[in-house]
Length: 168
Image (cartoon, rainbow, N blue to C red; front, side, top):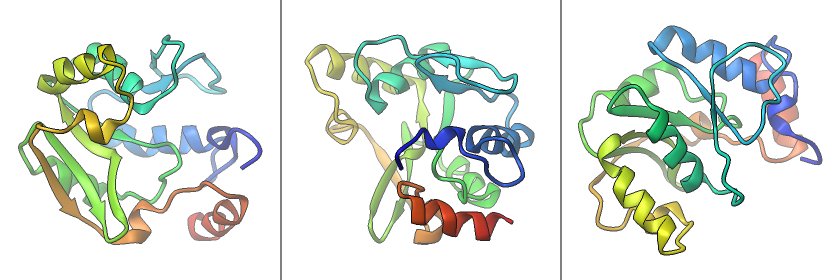
């Protein structure tokens, strides 16, 4: 993208990060943003990932450790079209991990993680494993199928521009 996509304006908000935060606030009793350092231009609870390594698995460990509940919904900041109905579909399933899946693959950053997977994730990190899909081997994962458009990522400028038209 050439710049921090979380800080790009989106959906009438100053940043994509605030857009995601504000749309999730009414759906959950607690919403927090996982960051390595505070870069928020608005007020929100932050779960700091202070590890030297940057990887989703490292962030998930910090999130699960900080969570005040057993089940945690996570969504990547660059996935702005995963709807409240889609979230409800994930929440309706009980399993250690409930993950979104589309024809193009699985989406571990559009998922619900139960606190019970925390020891598995910590063990993976201790053994040097950073890949989330490998850390989940042997863990019960239930997949919920969705259309691609709900999990469209904003990884490139043309995707961001196209999403601006959809969100307007």
